[in-house]
Picture 1: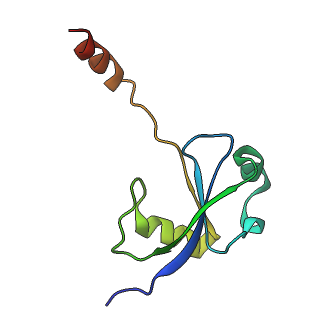
Picture 2 (picture 1 turned 90 degrees about the vertical axis):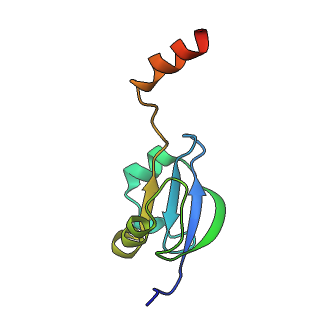
Length: 96
């Protein structure tokens, strides 16, 4: 049995590229810790999305996002990190 789609609203940070907030309620910023909102900056609306367990997200586990929305009202998607062990091999391969 499939879970009913859960709407969420996604906002990007104007201060940190590729940092996103998923909210359980449109403009539901009151659930955010003040320090998080200070660091995130004024949220910029990106889109509304219907989440369900079968939906694929590019960089997040949809079940984890849905759980966080249910339990705390938001989910924070951090920017991807470049693995330091990847950089030397990348640079070496481009030099030869």
